[in-house]
Image 1: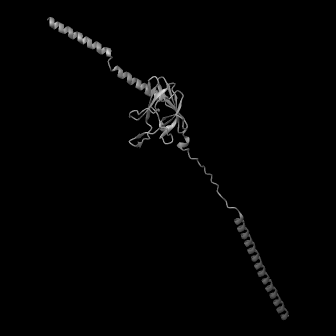
Image 2 (image 1 turned 135 degrees about the vertical axis):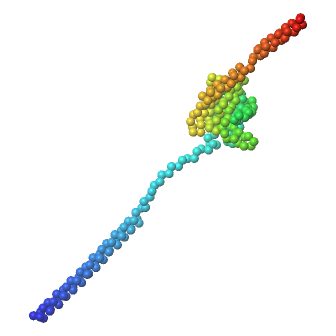
Image 3 (image 1 turned 90 degrees about the horizontal axis):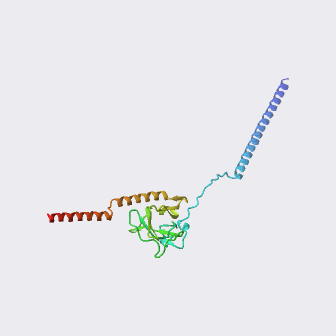
Length: 247
């Protein structure tokens, strides 16, 4: 009986040993399979990342076209006022005579200075509804002045004169000279392509000039008053002399 029990115990131990070895092999196999799966997944993921296109960020850039150069915007007309070379002048624009009268002289003044020479070419007039190229550079002592404080004196065919108190050369791209109620004014297109009008400003300045002229004339006695005063003084002096002589 003891031998049978011992044999049975040895067989049971052998079975248990074989069973343990089988579990270890299975575990190893399972671990190998899991590792293989993991490596496969990592390889697929890496391949997918490699083959997938890179994500790009689209940036929209608005490019503003550079403004046209002054030379490109100049329309050179056949006749001119001022300088014939429009491209090299400080100020250049088209100017139209819409006053209804022929202009025979066009003089420019800067600030409080004196009016310059006539800018119309010798022997030419600025006719009614005529458009000319106005080109002007203000040089004083070799320096180019850029402040747009200019006025213009116009002389008409009948010899009368009018003054444009406001003539903003640096702002104008094209302009018309108009006239009403005895004074001239400008209607012009500025650098921002907007229409500007100096009518109210010129009206105010015209009325101020008229008032100054009236005030100045009222302070001067008419010539007839001087003559009457002188004659009456002479008469009284003569009568005094006669009285003294008779006395």
